[in-house]
Length: 305
Image (cartoon, rainbow, N blue to C red; front, side, top):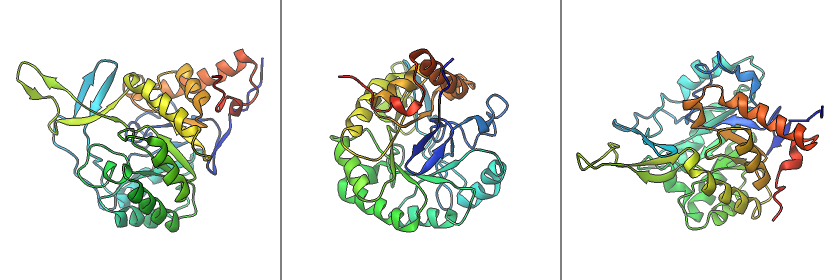
């Protein structure tokens, strides 16, 4: 049997395997730990955290769609102090790097969240979320315009020396333009894609299904778009990519790596299969063994066009 090196380096973050979880789909791992011990993951990515917490959007804020789901949670979270007290304390001592997803209402709030965390050794890296479609300020507002991308990434870069992953929105005309701006402003890696803007309508009531009307589409339905954008960005920048968007199994993950992702995030799959992360890790390893690949990094960008 082929011995496979599964370790990857995501912009300075050492991961024992290339699998983490998409922010907001896994909390900090406490609820999933009985199914898949968090130590099995390459990294844990927390739900997005702001300085003082956000209330989130009104309900209903989840809707099933063909091959996917819409969410309009709105970055609900209790704030950075609670994250440190509860989630980081629970993760402390476990053999897994922690990526904290950072959000904010303003440029300054992103920096303040990082400053509140940066001397905490329990935090291994940041995922700077400039791409959430479900809030009226911050989020996607910052991630679709090159000057604001340059400003926010630059400010965050000044605030930390830890690995900084910038999460990109697919809801743009040219994602490579945004990717290059983030790279030039100090991103160590890029994560993509966040959810696609979408909506659902109840024909009988003639009303939107979601209280906020629109939400973010995720799940297998977005995978072709995500693969395309990962491939485009891989060919446009030199920093590594954390790929996500409809990954349900090991084969999906391998496809993202072939398109150019160094690591992958499992998101919506966690809601339908609490063993999804384990199956993705095992699936990547099984693919490598079958193909005679001794180092998972050989897959990165291996698409043969």
